Structure formats: structure tokens, C-alpha cells
Length: 89
Image (cartoon, rainbow, N blue to C red; front, side):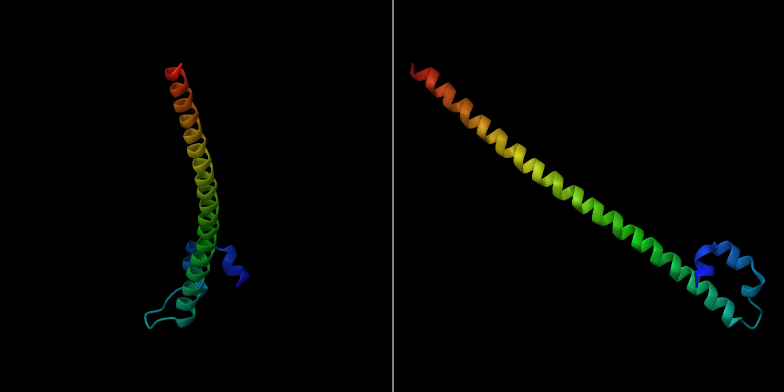
């Protein structure tokens, strides 16, 4: 399996061990199938890590936006109170 992980699919297709005969070479077909499966698993693991990182970033962004919204609400209340106090005098 390790030798398949290190080879490109093009190398496997060109190698003599995986050339398909007219009748059909089961070993060659299975080698190509295994290599494609290994490549897909590697890409899925990479995508999974990227999705997790994106999720963490989105969570942080949401927390910051909630904080800024609360800060803006407080500033608006203080501004409204100051305006009210100036109009009463």
C-alpha cells in the first residue's frame, strides 16, 4: 500500500504491472481502484481539516459580531440618554 501512496495515478497507469490485456487484468484494475481510493481518502481528510478550520473561524466571527452588536446597542442607549438629558435642561 505504501508504494501506491507515493506514486501518481499516471505512473500506475503507465507501469507494466497494471496494463490491461484484452481479456481484462484483474490485478491491474484492482491496483488502479486501490490507488484512486487512497487518493480520495487523502483528499477527504484534507477537506475535513479545512472544513473544521472554517467552522472555527465562523464561530469566532459570530462571537465578535455579537460583542460588537452589544457594544453598539450600549453606545446607542448612552447617546439617547445623553440627548434626553440635554433636552430636559
